[in-house]
Image 1 (cartoon, helix red, strand yellow):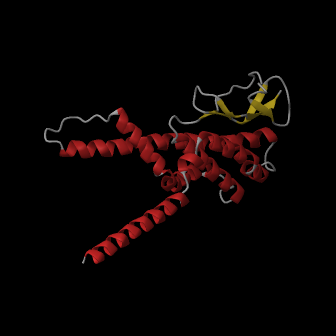
Image 2: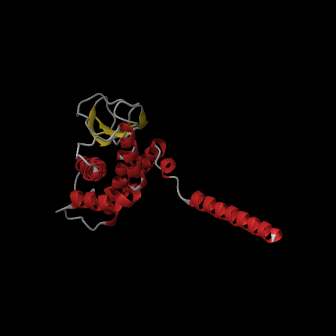
Image 3: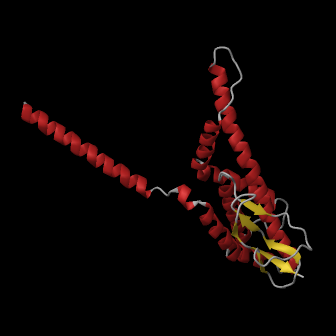
Length: 232
């Protein structure tokens, strides 16, 4: 009997060890979203978006308008995606908080107002990161609709791919804590700082218009990626 008990314990130990190894293997195969979407990685992807999908989409529209107009359309699409990702990220966080508060208030004996602690808010933001990929399909559909509604090139694949990629990166930037900052608010006539901007097709001491915005770690943080501007 003692021998059987010992064999049973050894078998259980081997099963537990094997299960642990399998679990570790499965976990190691899951992409580390925090690593993939760290700010430096997003900055690289943002630059790649301008070099690749932007260029392909620009070719679809530049035959129908001049250089500055086509650059404005491309930047406007990025702005729309950014604005809606910012709006939807805030709404989603508020929705998660409201659901948590509603559940707690519903089950409290005296129905007193519930306040979520700062610690709890950190978990809300972490949860939002964990469901970021699952949320992206809905966010992308909204951004495509807002960007292309009523426009004649709705079905052009390079344009659609560009907007989808803009949405993906803007969404991942917005669920960072704090969000990465894309500098859209640049007034024509400002000094063209070549430490912040690469030249588009014309150089000059002043900015004629922005083609691609500068990216920062956060609103008051260091620059992560240079923009592109037309000089005059």
